[in-house]
Amino acid sequence: MSAKSTVKIFIDEEPQPIGEFETPINFELDTRKLIDGKHILKIVSKDPTGREGIRIITFTVRNGPAIDIEGLKDHDVIDGVLPLMINAYSKGNQKKFLIDGSESPTSIPSWGWAGITVFFGWAIYYIITSLA
Image (cartoon, rainbow, N blue to C red; front, side, top):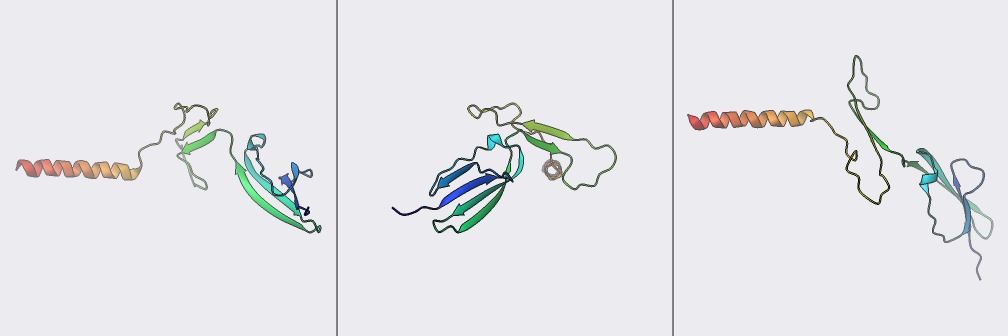
């Protein structure tokens, strides 16, 4: 029987691994136990001769409700009174689709207003030239 490599799996800067396994393994990372935000998955492997290898993977957890905001973006420079539209919605229990709150309402973008204006301008022009 050949000796196998082992891996230890760490989350963030925890000194104790969440698991130590012989390779190959299939592992399920339950993100429901982690808070929302940035995290680090560190995998330390050791081969049968004792040499170690490390792999670090950063990831972001977002299990909580998604937050959508219209009217303000990162690094905007603003002044005065700023109207904001804020919506927060969750995935629910993932066994049934929830329509209420699953979409964020948005205002019509400026290119939409421009398109509507051009269309109605063309329609008025068409009606005037057709009657003449």
